[in-house]
Amino acid sequence: GAGVSQSPSNKVTEKGKDVELRCDPISGHTALYWYRQSLGQGLEFLIYFQGNSAPDKSGLPSDRFSAERTGGSVSTLTIQRTQQEDSAVYLCASSLEREVSEAFFGQGTRLTVV
Amino acid sequence: GDSVTQMEGPVTLSEEAFLTINCTYTATGYPSLFWYVQYPGEGLQLLLKATKADDKGSNKGFEATYRKETTSFHLEKGSVQVSDSAVYFCALSDGMTALIFGKGTTLSVSS
Image (tube, rainbow over all chains, first blue to last red):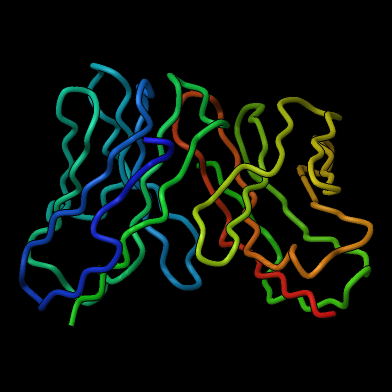
């Protein structure tokens, strides 16, 4: 597609349930990033995939969070046993190799845990 | 670790006013610096960047100069428009890891 696509755009879930958020990066982009945007907290880095290298998971806040990237393209961010503090907008971005400055962002998934 | 601090908003201006949004950074090396903008209902997009000291990034009438001596990258525009209303994020990268963002500054411009 023309840009980074994320789905769903909105997700409401009950505390304790698992959720999966999807990201379709721009075709040909080898780098993919997940960020979390919370009110008043800016953009928090979660995880970074680059080609076939091991992902940089240093930003994942707990072991309830995990992400995978299949075939070097689509990525899924999974949050297990969701908590209310997980409520945020989850943003995905992609870029060519390590050209971080040219990262293109999706419109995000707004997650609300009730 | 590396970090970015930007002025808290919201910033409220009248059309044609001068804009400054302050941004300072802490980094062990010599990072590249960026300003991203998030218009209402849209995704983040790169506004401008500077990759080394004294470089000036510019786009859409916005400018920012990489000041190593003051570790700053303040965003300026001489005459804002209503269409500039958005959230602005200062960010840095050392080229090896993902972008590190500030908390964002909301700009509201009225006619």
